[in-house]
Length: 96
Image 1 (cartoon, rainbow, N blue to C red):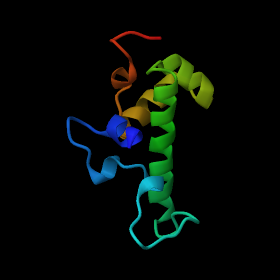
Image 2 (image 1 turned 45 degrees about the vertical axis):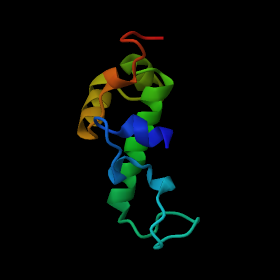
Image 3 (image 1 turned 90 degrees about the horizontal axis):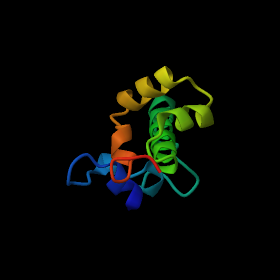
Image 4 (image 1 turned 180 degrees about the vertical axis):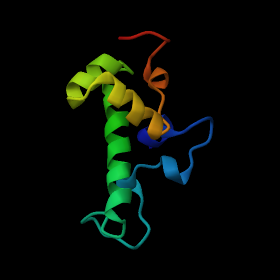
């Protein structure tokens, strides 16, 4: 549930904010996400990965980029494409 709150935009947690691994729709078992097209699964996995990086490094783009082994411009582009905002992962408006 914490991940869903972190992913939510605004004050409302929507279904799209709930991490894929936490959804139970009856079409898949504990084995995985086989009902999803590969492209959709990979997109969700990438978004979850980026959100986890941003959480771990408190929104620090340079540290996230180093960890992910990508340049900062690529990371910015991917974060934007997934509707994430690094500043939302910073605590008290500053890096920790």
